[in-house]
Length: 528
Image (cartoon, rainbow, N blue to C red; front, side, top):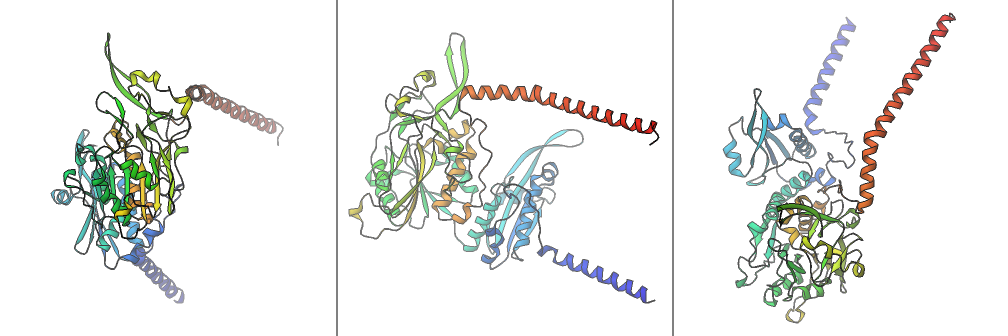
């Protein structure tokens, strides 16, 4: 009788323990992350995010079941969102919903979730299905949207930055100055515009027409100046200088040499109306020459001859692919990233004045050289590209960062005290435009621009949440003879050597087993 009561008590206690574990399971989270860079582990900033949230934040993940059943990524996204909720001590509530099955398609599209098409198998046939994978973040009466998410690369950054923005009730704005009067932000820089919006920024155009001058609100944390070498004179540069003196942060992307990118590819030195002199005053000297490099991208172009129109593809030295050796791993903008691609860049020189510090972000390879006159950019004359190589070969600076108390370019005009500012200077304007699509450079170039915006906005803690990329380039070997030799060795290794080693290993195993079998047979015959 006593034993039966004891068994009953033990059973009841076990059930109570399981019930308690079930009740507190949503507050206990454990994950063993075996990846090299801890891709599935939340940072300390994310784990302590609940300290900044006074009221509940609701995260709704709108994902189609058809997408979840076809790809593993939606499940990984849901896991990360669940981990955010588990670490939030009840401050973050996570919901997952299927817009298609719940009849919410029109509603989610109206709030900004982007529909897209995938191919799925249905009853032995392939059909096009409309699916969703977007996130709605709600806090009090405010909300933020991540219109499309299908990767973990920047998801942690996207969530934390938007939650912080909602809780602090601030809009992350960034000023845009397109210096070329013919440039259109929504057409010429559509990729950059979309990337900024997707990263939680609201671009503010400061010059719909340059005729009215520039009015830069002091509330803006940073401004992008894209071009303006031949259009921004002192009248327009004074507001930029005043913005910097008052603590504003600026990115300059400028060409030293103009190239007719969508026409004849003719090149000429640009005329400076004051912006280069202003940059030199801040400590960044941009030389109006071209950098060419053996570490380059391919250019595909048409030629017309007696045999008709032919399409050719060749290495084009004016289009530079930054290698791993040219990436500064010590600066927040460039650390743990892939190098961007530059199109007809000009070299920079870093000479910071007293009170200003500077750092190089990206450089060319040591195989780079300059064109200082008779700019030849047409691929039909590629044999003349190296005319000045012997005189100027060496590593060239392509992008740099400065910070500190900058001296004013118009100091006599200002009476207020200077405040510390940050600045990024890039010797290429084309890398931010549509050319990046022709070489599939969007991920590299846009990542560099987004990271620059974060650093210039003073959000250094958020930079660590962007993983960048670690894969490296597939064409990092520049020497053509070495590359050909390694490719030949790789083919021989995979075609002959490895199969022969496998066969040899099999023969050794077979012979070893035969010897072992013979010994066993001999022992049996001896009666052992």
